[in-house]
Amino acid sequence: TPQKVEHALHQQEVMIEEKIKQLQNTLSAIKALKVEVNQMQTVDFKKYADIIVNLQMNNEHYWLIKYFDNNTLDHIRNQFDKESGIKFIERFNQLNDKISALQHKNIPPEDSRVQALAKEFWQMVMEFTNGDMSILPKLIEFSNLKEDNEWFKKQATINEYIQPALQLYFKNSNVDPSGE
Picture 1 (cartoon, rainbow, N blue to C red):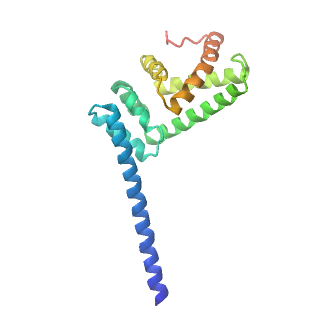
Picture 2: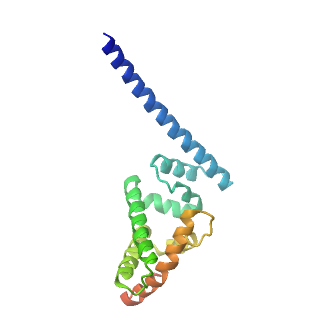
Picture 3: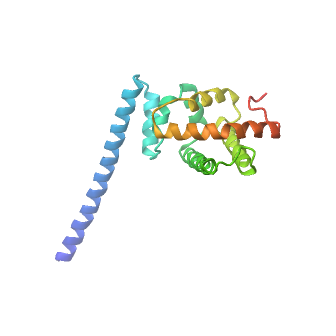
């Protein structure tokens, strides 16, 4: 019947549209990888693989990988799987949004709300490093990068605001950030 033919054609249409969507996503990932490869100026297949995996995960911060050295990337690979990595990034972004909100209200570092976020920030650093303080200098170096990019600008502003709160948190909690 015409209805059955129309239904069969509709199913084919849906399948083809899904394939087109998958191909468009793949094309976008390839274009993004091509940009990253040109910016990195080196052939590092391990980093390329990490970028591809993060593109497949729809991690909008995939491009950050090029800034990490191999030891830090190995640590990240061992510390996080796909699911826990995505959750960590989401939690980190949510924490940054909370910090940014207090910053816009000009809440001082000694305020209990800022101190609570400083504590949470430090706990996330500890979770990320898994207590390995040898990774901390790399994270500090990474956070001090001056790139002409909105993410880096936002992160620099957040870091500048949270730093005095972290120092106060360390002092009041007898926490030694060097791990000694």
